[in-house]
Image (tube, rainbow, N blue to C red; front, side):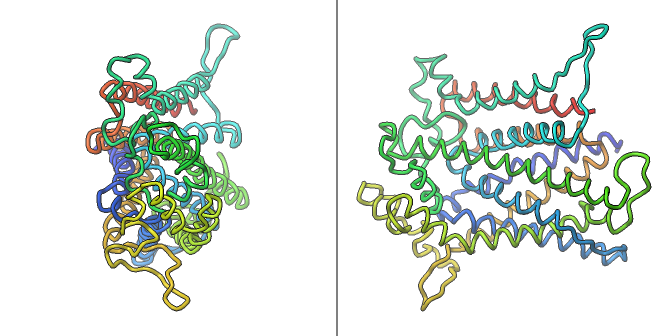
Length: 444
């Protein structure tokens, strides 16, 4: 296999795995169990930790030296990745995996590009328009990317204006996915854990006064929360990648091996950022510390959010919902209930439950699978970048990630609303996809 073909194949496979992993957040078993986002993320982080340990064990087994070189930058990067993962877990049930992945990936691409250009000093291609005339295309592609993302977010509204006679079915297909706030029904409430319902309550999106009529008092608020959280996930992801670049630069500067025409870095410095060795384990350690800490803090966060929503506790939110005729709030699978399936639940204080259920019977499959797909996608993309370079392989990686998540969301889960709304979403996704690819190619 030729080198260029191999890197392209690895990038495409990596993007497919990364675009597929959110589907495990939206399986029927997970939606029925309604695990706390921190519980789901704990399974993902555990998988990343085990994979990182396996990489280091493989190095030690073949006698590589150094076997392991710790870097705090891997821990800091993981501290950004875990919130990004939580944002994915929270937003997918609200807006669907197709829109979530598009918003998050688009935000990451735009912010990463701006950071590497304006902060880290990466050079952009300069185009000529004649003698003494030059221009940049990067700002144009950035603008197209943002416009495309807006088109995906408001695809149902755009379709309703362009095709008013066919807009009546715009809320078909589950009520949550693929752009445009739900115009009616309560489809967005399905599968939201009590922890994420508390987030809506704290922000006035769940049972809020002044909610649009016909959305059950929760539709538009939950959808808007999902959009904002998906974008926030992209912000955290861009920070995750920026930390890698900053840490590598700082370490290589200190060792006198940063930039061109410099000697090779000492083995211990180089190994710290080896994606097939020490970096993954440092990252995995940080992921476990961050995920476990957030999981243990979940009761405190729920109490604060419940207090802000006027209920004072998770049970208070359920009682309030019950008074308003919300039968789903009292289902046994909700986080904060009895677990519904006999799953493990941490207890203290004489048996009083304070931490959310770990939902072992469900998440031992879904959570571990999500983590495995993420690890696989990240590993394949790392190989692709090392063999084929950053610009072209990253563009292909992001492209296949967006296509994979879009196909799963629209074809498998029926996201996107009416036929016309799906058409607007698809066209906007194509514009965003092209802009992201061209943007990546503008780096020198």
